[in-house]
Length: 265
Length: 227
Image 1 (spheres, helix red, strand yellow):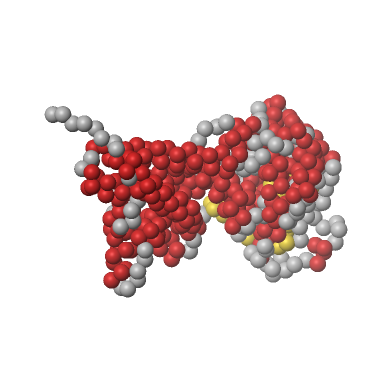
Image 2 (cartoon, rainbow over the protein chains, first blue to last red):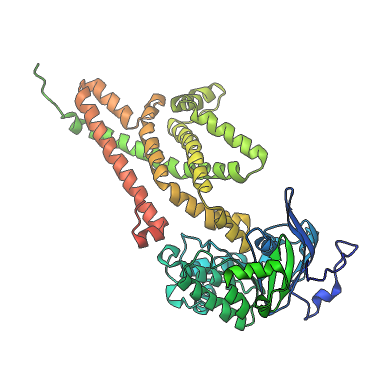
């Protein structure tokens, strides 16, 4: 039983809606998105919209497809069916320039993936220097700005191994911010951290949310999803099983969500 | 048996010894950077190149690693001469060393690239870096750092291997030694001295390469992590 209304599949797969250019258009639009790994159907028709400035939390058990759905948004996974439009680009068409897309869509990983041979400042400015070709002075200012945003202005010259897990993850967030993306994806960014460090990372994300950054996060932090996200999406067996505002977690409509939150709350 | 050690040849043949030392060092330093570049290029070609490049690298690497260096040198020097392609002894020695050390370096660097976690490449690609930019700024520095001790070892081995170059009349240190002992019949003393000179040169080369690492890997310097 899914509560999501499924839009009828459009006849022409490459059809591009002119409404995508209007300001109210969602930044991310899933329509019946499907994804298979071999014979295994991981996404079985996802419908989901993320409006500019919106924070959407994807929750669900391991294997429910939430991380795969997230990774489709910046092209780390190719969609096999349906339509996925991100920042006006039709990813399902297969003709999207991923490097252009990824200048608009940042991602933060569970395992940070900072570059260990570079300082925090160099980590943050590598892509702006190489991709956007900004100068050295500008890069230094940019690093100072985004590191301050995550509360690490004093760690610019530190190497990742000199930082705690929480600090490393905040540098990774700053690294995404430095590209001035329209949207940031968070893939279980606190799963490798203890509760204290989790708190400092979540605080940074919350501040970004209040600042109007559009975000999609896969998370196991139910309290956080409930308080910070504008919309919560519960995924189950490759489908959007239930979605709504954060309060939905207090009043689950489906047995599956009831069981899922029952374990956590 | 009474044998009196006689090191007086040191005085008499000092200029020859210096000449040999310089030639050995010259061959070595001329070969290190091109050999490293060739090997790195081959590692990249084998890992990320098109199928024909991968096959070409495998043939090159296995061909070189499974034949003696001295045969490679002879082929370059005497073999090509038959075809009227004449190369001087020094040039032939350097070309042979570059080709030889390039093959070993290719395997060392391949191991280095393979040891980098996949997440590093994914992160670079998610930051909109081109594959070539990721290779240059993210993968290469980490790969070199990881295999640096093996590279140093390989280059020291290469320096020691220059001792066969007297066979094509490049009068490097071993060639000079042979010449001195054939005039003085002081084989014991001569080769003892030569061994010590090699030992000193190899140590200096190691130290120099570690110094290069101090400059190339600022993180190691800052954190004091030994290589």
